[in-house]
Length: 323
Image 1 (tube, helix red, strand yellow):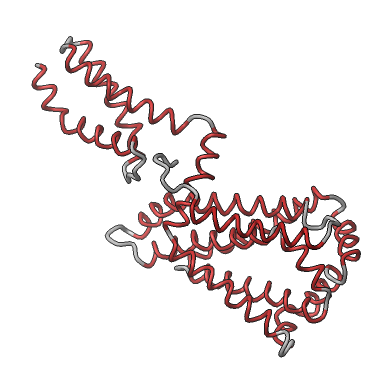
Image 2 (tube, rainbow, N blue to C red):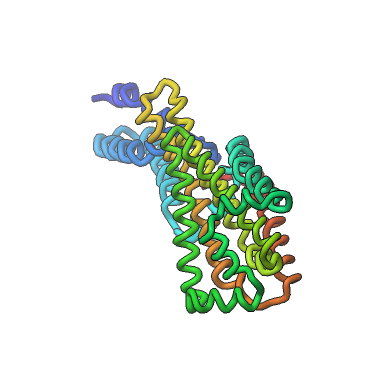
């Protein structure tokens, strides 16, 4: 095979590879990014053949440059777990949330509307709250939020240590977020239901404590971790709704294929929800029940909410390379 025949046969494949590399170098999203390793291997074979057949420095130099560019991209994406995590947290996750801002507000409304409705209804007719919590739920709220000293004693007797509290809370929070996410498999209906259910239940708990318990013990406990936990719930809802929309509107793809493709693009939201849930458990287990002044707890809670607002609005903007 002559040099001309070799170039003619592979020219289009090389151009596709070069376009893919250029888009990834610029940090642009590319639906064919997962094909880079395969195309990289094919190009390595082409380079080896060109060198073996002595097709000249012009062709081998071009292929070698393309191989080096592909290698640098693959190495960059696979190296340094901590660096990749930092890039995801600083850039990839907030960008993913902003990219699905409509789903963010939909899931937020589905949680916060019933939350405030139930919390405020307790001042007018507590029967709704009582029906939502039930006798066992109200008894549990009385034990937990009857007062600051009673709350700390209850937690210590229930869990024994801060670490055990952390373990319980991460188990509980992950279970909630998983149900919200997995509910998307029911065409999104399950996700909306679990968001609504949690809004009703948590709002009922807040309303009951405001009327029949010790509000200070409740709000000082939840202030610190509330932003992590509730936003993690909303992000899990976004991921679940993405699955639901893939089932309802698969486009030209078969539903199974559309669901598989959507799952890959939903990973940043799933990882982000897991990150927020883990941080919520850390704060809840090691800070929320600590006997510190109430004003300090409120200040920390407000700071975290403002920090999350700034993070999701501005983090990752103007950054050239995203994970």
